[in-house]
Length: 189
Image (cartoon, rainbow, N blue to C red; front, top):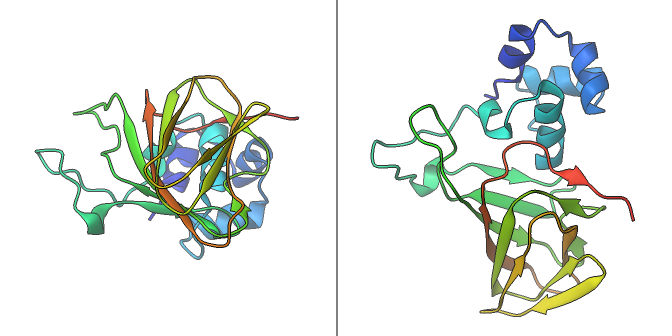
């Protein structure tokens, strides 16, 4: 269960106020808080930004072992709004006892899909490694085409989009340092 209601109430914020700050509807946030629906990664980022907390703080189902091992069944998986992109968080989230300096995410992008509609930028360096399929990483105005085994680096603050223009699912791993918790800025073209 997500901890959105807990953070909202601790800030003495109404659902209406959170809806206005996040750009979500009141009923959508209410359904998420009641556990009736799971938010997309994009929606969770917007809600975290509205609450001004790191996104990982809203997640409640990750158990970090004393040795910082996360078993496969404990890894958090989130989806894009259209469910064509999935993200599996492979590293521990930040906690009072541990604050990671990098974040590792496994991604899958369905054929003819992309991770966001508008380019995003964040103040982290991001490394991308493709394991299956073909991935086009649009960095600014440049398209970098990656095949299995290829890598690229997205320097911090550069707008980018992951695109799968092929007929098969594209899979890979992304690493961000420092970790991006919460809001990433959308860039208008």
